[in-house]
Length: 258
Image (tube, one colour):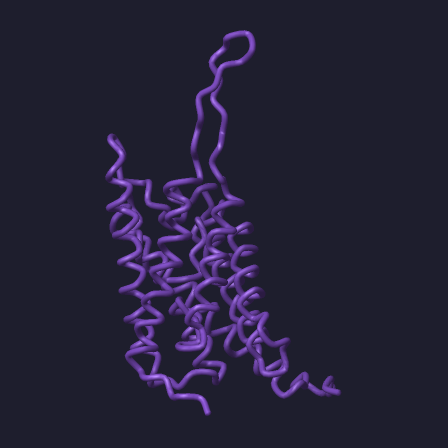
């Protein structure tokens, strides 16, 4: 018999998981994405060798945070670590609406604590400046690739919606058992590979808020976008999966179940 999980335990699991996501993902971007080692060629010429993990490493780091914490505490809270995921789960009928506020508060606190940890450690490097260097999300002049608000909105909404569809599908009772966290983590990795140049990838308001106020440089003023667009995408994903695939059926006619 499964022992019921208390509500405070769920909140704590969401706080821990969101902390780990921000600290591991954004922390990799801050500490390890751009690292240069000095070297000398055989002709005595000074060289700089890029040894940082780059976009690929950051994308993998975000995916790995979700995989590890989903296995660690997913059985306690469901392993959301993201207000947009919580909204999508509620819209899709996987989470009671009464649980949403507690999850959101826990996730936002966890994200802020993750950002604080990154800020505290990074300040241990002489000459480091937080302004513009905390892996914040942005559009326009604050987008890594200079993408417009409209482009960022479209990307964040589509990517978050598909993320929710993957989550609801991978955790469906008919899905292969035990592989959900892998599918979800790989999905988040792919999302980052697509959209780091566009918005520095949010799809998660808690991740965005966790670093925005430490980053400054326009990030707090643009934070509204990285609440609004992922939440819209989360709601869309929460509608799409049960609408299209509930009970093994395409709701518009064809039964695809065995």
